[in-house]
Length: 296
Image (cartoon, rainbow, N blue to C red):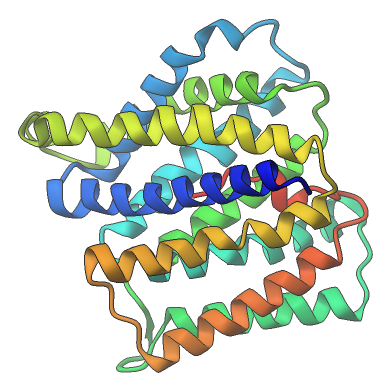
């Protein structure tokens, strides 16, 4: 890989990591309800890349479902989790999406795996459970269940996207934004309150955060990311994007005061080793299973 492209992937991973920090600030410090935040983010994305909506790829219903699951839907569920979880632990736990995608490819697409990828999946699941589990009670840590659900949604979307051909990066972003607006608006109206007052109180700080998440992360960083995965093999890119959760952990500790105890550090190490093993043994049926999912 050329040094320029390594710099690009590092920049993309840093932007993704900053997105987790920014989103944590929005839902926890500014106090904007997470489903409302996800909806407003989707509106801004759809407006920014509206010219790329058409012609609409087929099958259309599958495109809408996949775009929602990978994009606005999984992001909104992730933001719900961030209200209670730290950005650092959420970044680690979200890595469970790769085993989910592999399991779904086995069930739905008939993928066959050997012992190395099975070992990687087992390590990822064990490391994630170690981070999630609350040692003080027989419960899972608050918020992280939603992060797991977010990863599962993104994985299901990746399987659906496998059966759609010819979707360009900006076209996908356009449908990811548009498909999420109505469902998230309805969900926010049903399950949240104080949306208007919270967004108005957030002022320019909130506007800056949502603009960063929508335009810099989704439109710019993800377009650069899709450009890279079209240039290089999946097993070359996949290990490099592990920099994103590492950057998130570091930024979470430095900027938000996230706490890392020995249990979390051990769980993170086990998780990253498992993900690396799976990434180096790419999915034969879906060679870009890890890469197709929109990163947090």
